[in-house]
Image (tube, rainbow, N blue to C red; front, side, top):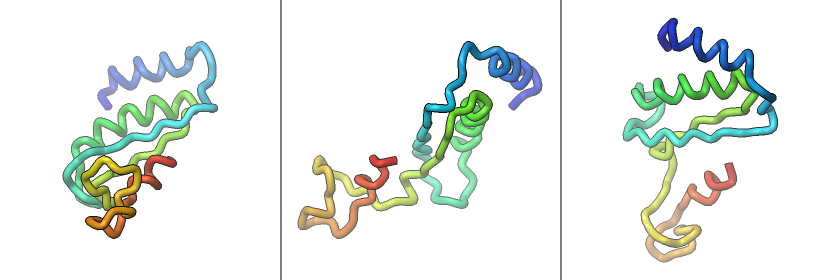
Length: 94
């Protein structure tokens, strides 16, 4: 984060109209790189994450590429003949 952007966001966070500690943010980093390979998208998410956290918001970052998420229209594709595993239902609970 640039120094100028940091000053602006620090000022806005310090003078926020109320607290947001009752909120949670889930970032889905849709990079094609599996963890721990560097993701430029993660750098952009990190800037937003810092702003949310400065306002008391809980954050979590997930890379869907690290999970088994089969293509299809079913709510749980592991219930079909084509797929043995589907992590999407658990991710939806996040």
